[in-house]
Amino acid sequence: MKNLFTLLLTVLASFTMMADVSFSDKAVLLKLYNSTNGANWTTKWDLASPVSTWYGVRLEGDEVVSINLADNNLVGEIPSEIVNLVNLQELNLHKNGISGTIPNSLQNLKELKILDLSFNRLSGAIPVSICEMNKLQDLELYMNRLTGELPEQIGKLQSLETLAVFNNEIEGQIPSSLYEVKTLKILLLNSNKLVGKLSANVSNLKMLENLSLFENNMDGQVPFSLENLSNLKEMNISYNMFSGLTSRRLAVLDTLNLTMLNEKGAVALMNVAMEIERPLVSED
Image (tube, rainbow, N blue to C red; front, side, top):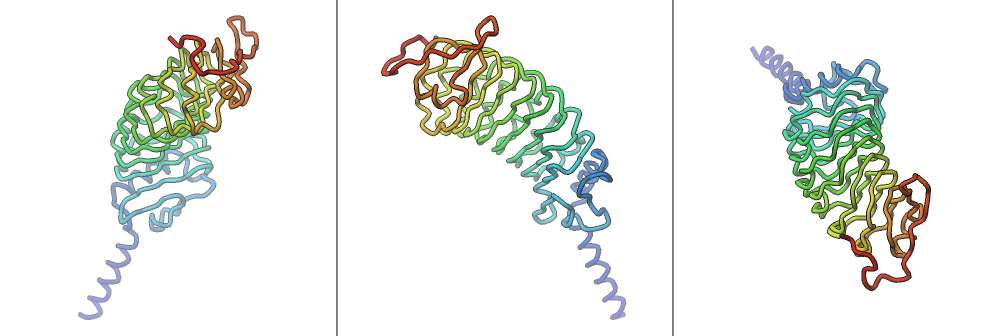
């Protein structure tokens, strides 16, 4: 009887070790593995081992809180079931061969702080559901084939510090709500198809350190209010169609010295004002 009890304890302990994650979370991980050709990943998962040993997966208790499979030769599509990992705080699939679209229903990922799907082959629009992820701090979707406009509701991401969507085919104007994300430190929207003006409300982004808008189709006056961004260390807004006067500080700060394109596509430097004690050109 004693031996039987010991055997049962051993079996139970072994089962517990193997079941170190909830069945539902493990099912999602297996779906991700199969949907992205896991057999050919650079670093594969040993599916016979506990999930806690799987490369790039971090657990807290029996819950998956982080998946970091950057540069690991994932090829295929992100399964829609990924949104069932409701405790996920980080999803990093940077630099893989992920195709298809970004899953909808991302609002289920209420705990997500980092979403990095950059340097893949994703297409389609950025789902509006991303704007419901209130804890999101880092959103990196650059170097894909994304189209459509930035969601107008993006200003709801009041914890966002990094927004990097460069080298896509994003159209339309910068949403007015984005200028209300006062936590934003890095804003990289270059090499898209953005149009319209850079709002004077950019001065609301007091924490901004890096602003990159170059190689778009934006026009109008460069807001003198950019001068008020005391934390701004890097800026590149060249190769747009901005016109009028700008300040010497902004011209020096810009990596390409505010080199613009005119209506004929010719390259020209913006005129630099000697001082900007008062606005020299209306920003209306």
